[in-house]
Image 1 (cartoon, rainbow, N blue to C red):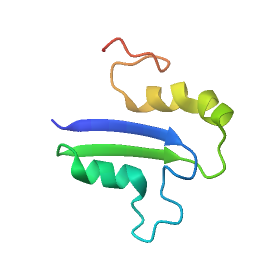
Image 2 (image 1 turned 90 degrees about the vertical axis):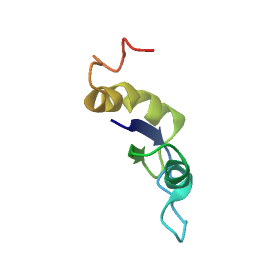
Image 3 (image 1 turned 45 degrees about the horizontal axis):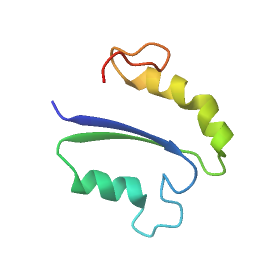
Amino acid sequence: MGVRVTVLGDSYVPGVGDPAHLGWVGRVAAAGPQPVTVDNLGVRGDTGADVAARWAREVARRAPGCDDGWCPRS
């Protein structure tokens, strides 16, 4: 089945400036359990308020069994 991880944040999330184009998310995914699906949703220039405004919508779109970003599973 595998693991699915959704990561939100600013330009550090997609790895802006990383010559390998992995960023920390790609490096963690490569080192973690396999298979893994990573939704790397970092947006350059996002602030904490920007991430807070979109996290529930973004997670709800990607997490089966979740409604409006609130997931019944722990």
